[in-house]
Length: 309
Length: 286
Image: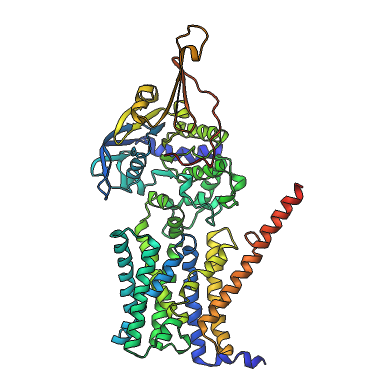
């Protein structure tokens, strides 16, 4: 931890003044096929927070990610990262991206240490020769995610959770103030999920802003400060307690979400008015009981489960 | 005996053939390190066949062959992109369609207007009879390609490994991919001279495939691949003097033998190693 405090410290000091913020105003993205993936989307995210980007497939989650990384040009509106235009933010290594596991060729001949070193490329010179600082930051990032012992393994030899941690380490080594995580909990066991969440908590404390696209509704209230609900546009955005409500979720997911409501005689022998609500789209379900939100121990996600519709 | 083995080195044309082959073999092997990782191996074959009409046309018009090859290479890429966008055909069908059409056109041109270059030379290569102007062209293409690859190999690696990430750290992935395919076409043209259009595919696939079985680090993969490509090409040209056989055939046969050796004996990814592992596991848990 000591090591990391050093490596995060100075960068945090530089940029905290600016704040690791994301500001999206009136964003519209239209693809070449003529499809308007998002329109009139606006939200503001503050430094030192974890935000969930929630919506069905095709709701525009990945389009928003692409727009933030500058892959697609907005047809209207603007995005500012730490107060800067996207292109400038990218060239300053402000944005670190953690890809979905399916996007990676796990047979690619790279070792764990090589992948994390890629996080430093944006900081290196024209020839990408790692300096002592680069090596030190790679060591620190591996240490922080507990993968130091695996640095000489080929990436395909790791478990699902270890793979995830390697790519998180790459984001740490990159020292991006804004970290985008694309479905980080897909194919990851509950233990690793908990480990990732606690790591994200530490990064939040260090002033990072994390934007997470997720299907994993059940854990959103546990660790996300803010939620952006999407369906081609922003349906609701703000603090989790206000936005992540049953009514809003039903609006965002329509008929797509499985919805169980147990109450009355199905649940109680007495006249207890509380009922149990389960919202799920095949991953960890969101369980609401009475007025409280309580989570039930959920079954571990299957790594090879078929991709969600 | 000894002096007999040194005979090829006393002929200027043999020396030239050996070092040109080694240079081209090395650069093609560098590219093969990338090509085998992406499932794009057949693109090398398609390009090599597509440039044939350009090479034939250039000889007929008395232009440098690289100019003609470059022109038809671009034509092939644009043609493939156009057909793919405006039809519902799959990519492999489009590639197959476009490159065979161009190859046929090339054969037709070369047979109707026989020039200094014969159909056989284009299809099978003839490094032993390469002209000095062609040597200059091949040397320039190879040297420039090698220099660019050495400067940008890490960026290309990130683009091939994780394109979204590459873009997110500000790399121009479009430009880097365009650079890669330009170098690939240029080097297949250079390799036409040594092994001919039919065997170019081996030059841009086999060394990389062999190295892929021998290491888990991309940097080493490149080094091994280039060493194999240059070594086999040099040795192939040398051996072809004694066998009096087609240089291209000898080079590719050598490369294949080395691939088979790696396939069987590679310490970690070889057939025997995998078998040994299975036996150990079976032995540990009866």
